[in-house]
Length: 70
Image (cartoon, rainbow, N blue to C red; front, top):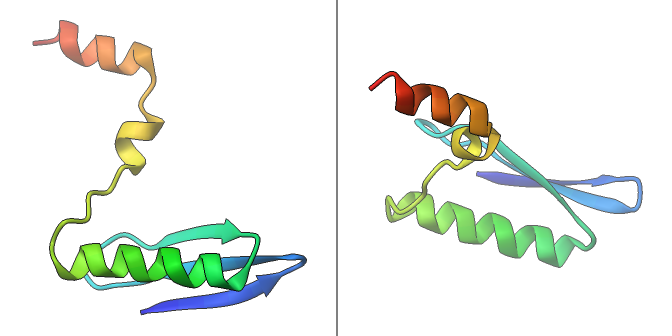
């Protein structure tokens, strides 16, 4: 279930769901936060959600190191 909270002049949407990582993001309006949270929760319900945290935080050096170890 997603929750929204006011953080200064922005809104934070946080999604916690069993078997998925906790996700949070900051938005300018509450409508944006609600829309994005609903979109992500829908993807989770349909098993189409892909966690991109690990791929986005991988550096080129790490990727090349894994490739060379093969």
